[in-house]
Amino acid sequence: MTGPKPISRELARERGLLRYFTGKPCKHGHVAERLLSNRECVVCAKLRDVQWLITPKGKAYQRQYRETPKMRNYHREYSRKRYLEKKAANQSVRESCETEDRLRVLKPKEILQLLRAEVTKAGGQEAWAKKAGIDRALVNKVIHQKRPVSRNMMKALGLRVVVVKD
Image 1 (cartoon, rainbow, N blue to C red):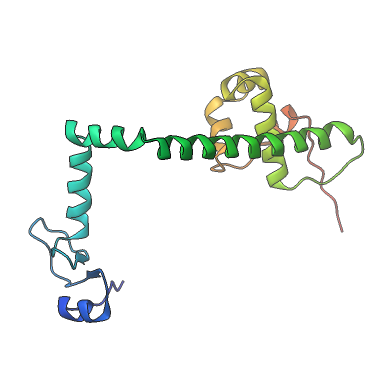
Image 2: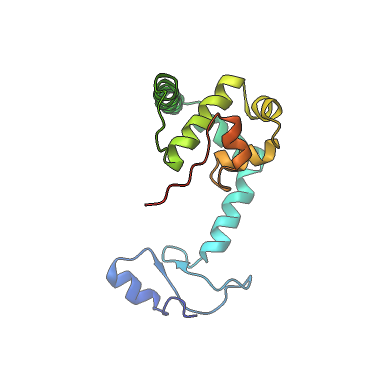
């Protein structure tokens, strides 16, 4: 396995880069790129930032930043937009499934949308899982696309698997 090729700080500066790589470990043992501005390794810089954010001063800074009118409006609009998108997608899936009585082929994405709509209608993953007799953790993994939809889940959704020979 080959990593990035070493480049000198001067060459990085000439090329207008923000980072350079020496291939040598920093004083804490990280072999990573370094920032051109202060020669600090990027891993050490990230750790320093994270450690600062958990201090009272860092928490106060985060709170102050989050509570600015600009950020409040941004998060409010983003949340509303996502809510409306999900609501429209769930409604269209629900309507298409309720109005069509004939057989049709569903794509995995459509099955997932149907599952999400049913979970929302039931009042949450735990409620739907209990009603369907399926493990809640499995429902969560399927919704987050870490597991495929199981046959029992399809049955609980009112779907059936049909194998067709071409």
